[in-house]
Amino acid sequence: MASVTQLGYLGLTVSKLGEWEKFATGVLGLQLAGKTADGALLLRMDEYHHRFIVSEGPDDDLAFAGWEVPSQPALMELAGQIKAAGIEVQAGSAEEAARRGVAEFIRFADPSGNPAEAYYGPLISFENPFRSPRAISGFDTGTMGLGHIVVRVDDAQRGLHFYRDVLGMRISDFIDLKMRRGRPTDNLKLTFMHCNPRHHSIAFGAIPVPKRLLHFMLQVKSIDDVGSTYYVAQDAGAEISASLGRHTNDHMVSFYMRTPAGFEVEYGYGARTIDDRIWKVERHEAPSIWGHRGLAGTPAK
Ligand SMILES: [Fe+2]
Image (tube, rainbow, N blue to C red; front, side, top):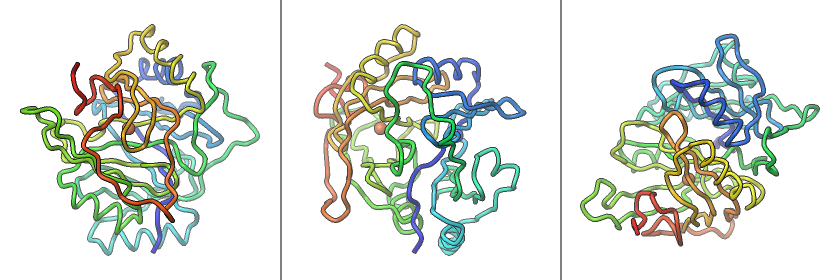
C-alpha cells in the first residue's frame, strides 16, 4: 500500500490578495518566492521552492492540500487506492504541475469534498537558501512537511477511513471537546492524523462552520519566534483569535491569529513528535494544558 509522507503544499484562495501578501511576509515571515502570470503568490518557508500557492478569488478558503509521495510508482499506486475507494481521480496538467513546482500530481477530494492532491518531485532550491523577510530563526519542516491543517468534514468516521485506509495515514489521537455547554462546539470530536513524525498533518471534525479550512499551522524553530510574532501580529492589527497556550495532544506552545481571509493560522514551537514503534492512540477532553483563551473548548475566563 502507498502512503502519503507529508503535507507538502497548500493552495489557498483569498479575496484580499494584497493584504494577504503583507500578512504572510510581514507577520508570518514567509518569503515571496515569486508570482505567477495571473498574480498568485508563491510563498516559501524552507528549501522547497514554494509551499504556498495563494490565488485571488472570492472563496477565502482552502483551494487544495498537496500530499507528497516519494516517486512516480508510489503516485500511481496511490491513485489506484483512491479509485478503488470509489473516488474520482484526475491527472493534473503539466502547466498546473509547474505552478505547484512538482513533477506530476493527481487531484481528488476527500469524502466531504475537501480538495486534495498528491504529487511527487517537488522543486528544491538548495542553491538559493530560504531567507525570511523577518528576523526569525525559521520553520521546522523537512520530512515533517509544511505544518498541519484543520478542516471540516461531514462525517468524522468516513474521514478517518479515507485518510487512514486510502491515503495510508495513522491516527494520533482524539480530542472530545465537552467544555462549552450549550454551544455549537458541545461534544465535538476532533480526529488527529499523522504521516511522519509531526504529531498531526491533518485534523478534522464535523464542525458547524461555513468554511472548509479552520486553520493551518506553522512551526518555528524558537520560542522567541513565537513570542516576537505574537507582538508583531498585534502591531500589524491582526486579530489574536487564541492567546498563547500549550496543547494537550501535540504539546505545541502556540497562539492563533486570523488571516485577512478569515481562516486562522496557528503559530507554534516545541511540539512533541511521534515514533510509530511506541506511539499509542490517546484521548483528550481539553484542547490545551494552559492558555489558548479564545479557542473553542477552552474556558472563557
Ligand atoms: Fe493546530
